[in-house]
Length: 203
Image (cartoon, rainbow, N blue to C red; front, side, top):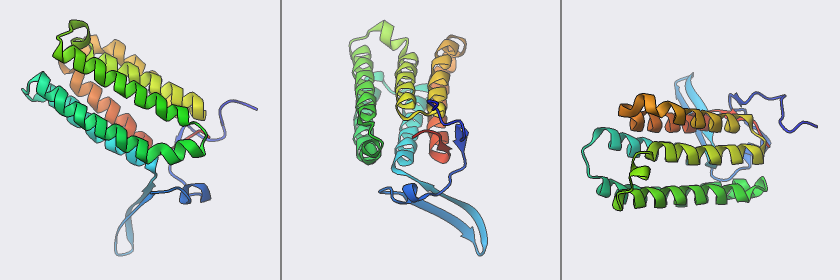
């Protein structure tokens, strides 16, 4: 018996199943004009959490890149939004992690995000250069840990690969210093949207 299920690709088009249909809070989308189907899919609670966080990340990182708003004001607003995101994530994913018997994964993500928020706020309000100069690397690193832990817990190659990509981007940041907030936000959001749009392997 292998650790990963190699019979399924890491990412594939979503296939409705009995297990998925029994999940709580699932969203079904079916756009069509007459008999012409334009777009049809569904989003589980995990997918919804990914989409919500992708929107938060785009807002946070792109504002830091393009808008001349004070760092202290940004830190205040983004901390509030991130706390809302954490609460929403816990609400959306609790059922899933319990059904998969990996509740510790959710605790891991909450701890990682709270640590990131605390370090970010301390760096901004106390003027810590080490944190201020490495905000993007900090969040990419925390995401790397989260993805890899989750991937190992649910035996998902897609999630582990996402974690590795986040890690690799850290080493590219010095070469895109002027655009690192834009790049980091776009990359992290894109990964989340990909995971929401496709069905990934795992338990």
